[in-house]
Length: 528
Image 1 (cartoon, rainbow, N blue to C red):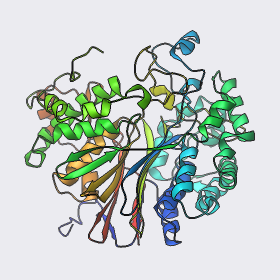
Image 2 (image 1 turned 45 degrees about the vertical axis):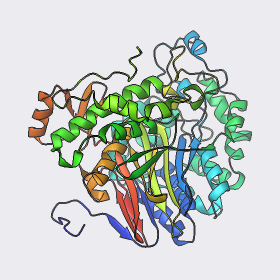
Image 3 (image 1 turned 90 degrees about the vertical axis):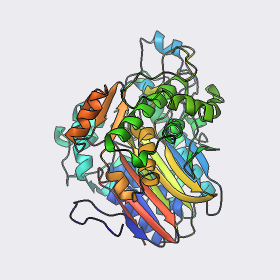
Image 4 (image 1 turned 135 degrees about the horizontal axis):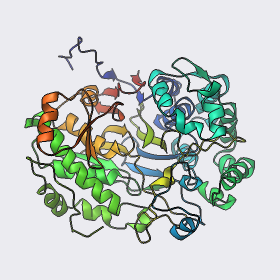
């Protein structure tokens, strides 16, 4: 960092010696920092920050969404919290097929709405590890919801880009399209019903969301749209969040921890296992992009075929992370040309916010909350103000597929918090936003930090690429020469018009905290 180029128009990493928080929105960062300064711990700050972000960044997250977290208590082992919701008990491939669905579940269908898991996860985290009352942690979020918040530039850009989809639901449009159009940066938006919900949860915990009058209203609205949800589905969801053991893999002297399936963290680890066999530090940009694209293509092929609710894909993590599988898959990468992916044993076969916190005691949390598509399902309950996510759109309508929709089943998730340790000590909570990009983003970010020795902000600022769906997406900052090289290897290129993903991270080393927050978003890392 001593040779930082101050003429680059980039920003350096943030440094502090006490505590730090990094989020993708300035008001969320400020809320979490305030809690840390008031004596709260990492969990308290994370809950304060995410509650604010659920108000001020409604495209990306909300209380009607899902959540995953990795928590590393000071001196303790990393543990994972699964806060993803389940499909209604009446949901099945046969039931949805009979209702006329075919092939996939659309974003705006009521069947894309699984029981939201975020509030169950927040309350489980708070009960087990929080120290300050929820009323205090939600104070800023409630204030922004009731009195209003100014729309930030990146949020405004995304809002405008999704104007048409949100216009499809009259209740959502009434809230999110004031005067019939998307707000611009600086416009003030209010969500008083959301303020009411946060006040209820602060006073009554998860029960205030999953049981009683609020749950009755949400279920009634979903059923009016044709959903199969019941009050019992929501009541079961109150205690739905559960602690599980993370999955992990070593990468060049570090241990990388991810939430296990039903999250796609396993795909991130598989990419790392594959690329570990290459000297990425010695490669030029075109070679690095090619290797990551080919490894991503292979890992996502396995993800889509095998990863699902953990009750339906037992043993897949141990299998895919074995050295034998990694070596076999690595051998299929040809440095001279792009190849189609195949499964290792040859059988036939979208939106988010992320934040991380390290407190003065050394507790670290890696935290992600999502409604999947921009504005989730776009379905907003006019009586509660809750905007429902669309995570059920990830389910397959294929009988026998591990990720086929089924009664009370969790779908495969793209949202994945990450945590790095070394010799049993926490080194870095980190995460990458951007729907399907997240697993690829984890691997690319860690490679930049570990292989190339980049500081956190520099690793985030590297031009991004993403090989997915038969196309290699490139940010426009990738040079024409590199593009030509990649095309010559057979990659089908697409130059994106919107930035690929976003990221945050905090590195812990020798009493110093180094934080980064992606310049592709509005947020920042701050500490004291």
